[in-house]
Image 1: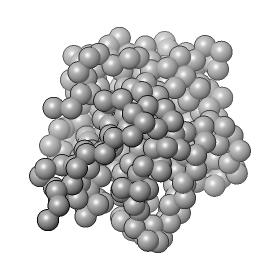
Image 2: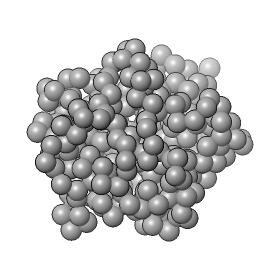
Image 3: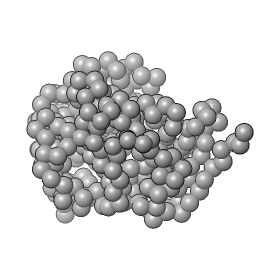
Length: 281
């Protein structure tokens, strides 16, 4: 039997590499310019290797009754880990994936094809431009996992962007974002202030060590116009192999402090991760 071999290709926005996992027969790690982007097991689409992806998965499991199909908009494609997860856990869902790097989508489609009938439509476009043209109330869930290199692009951090996200979501919809920061959390606090200006309810999921400012790391932002099921999320994230905390309510408002919403003209990308923060072990 032929052993899978790594695949490397220069795409529109960098050098993408697919590396097989020696421990799982049809599992692959995608990196772009050396930074881990996605992990996919073609035989087990519900396997979420990255901690932040599992946290997004926990939220996806709680946004509606189990198995109910959803209309999901993904800003940022990677190797389509979460679209595969939704297709497996909520059959019949309709999903749109917006990815600026068309070469990356082509690489993934060639080597990690989606199963037939997955209900996933791929679009090569800038996330903000595509979002601004999307119909009102057309999504149950919007997941923003967009990184230019290892940084969230500035134009996906502003109040105008948050308002577009709210417009595209249905009244009972949920916005999710994968963010990254470290103490003093200037970026993360600004994002909380920005989304608090648009959505009634916020929650933040992150490892305690990240929230205490001990290291750089991911934080998953959850925003909605209705109460988020933080009790279930807290149980699920606390029992993870890498336990996380769910911050909400007064504690999250205290964390946000005096941070102000971000205007387009003041928007900046998320901070550059320190060397080794997201490296391959």
